[in-house]
Image (tube, rainbow, N blue to C red):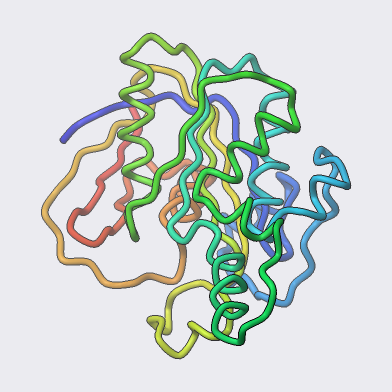
Amino acid sequence: MKFAINVIDWQAMAPGLSDPAQWLSWARQPFAIHPDAPQAKLCELPMMTARRLSSGSKLAVECGMAMLRRHQIDAVLYTSRHGELERNYRILHALATEQALSPTDFALSVHNSAVGNLTIAAKKPIVSSSLSAGSETFQQGLCEVICLLQAGYQRVLMVDFDGALPEFYHPHLPPEMPTWAYAVALVIEAGGDLRCETRPHDGAEVALPQSLQFLQHYLQDSPNFTLAGERLAWRWSRA
């Protein structure tokens, strides 16, 4: 598989990282993201909406609203490996312990909850969808973005995110898997600035999600880099 894109803007949030200067510093001298570092204050998201959202969805909608404010977006794609796992765990725990279910948890437990809340909070009836594809969620999302561009949408917003993973699952996760909330938003147009080509690959879990690996190399202006996936290696180059 081969494809190419132009990234015209970005925004990201993770523990201890929010503004562009912090992310540039992190990319140039990478350090481990500490799960206990404070998240930045939300500036775009209405308070009442933020109170209802899970940790990852808050960041995803916050970044998405900033991009919608700065750009004329034609379509939106949200990608998340684990989706609303925090909320679904609470539902399962309530069922297992015979407690009453939270109506909010039930209503917002679906995978497209974040992107739906984005369009509602921004009051924009925009074409939107959501996707999950395991450890390769970010790269498969970019394949979906290519389809949207080929369908005629000029400018696509893609937001890759995950929430804090409940401690119940930690003993069963690969030790390298991040368990903290993050979001990476990219505004993408058709073009050839960044080119990607796949190669067969037997991957292992890595310390950063693909979207944060991509952002790191993008901010470093790396001429070539590879993102490892479960079955594919995604080799990137700059034109």
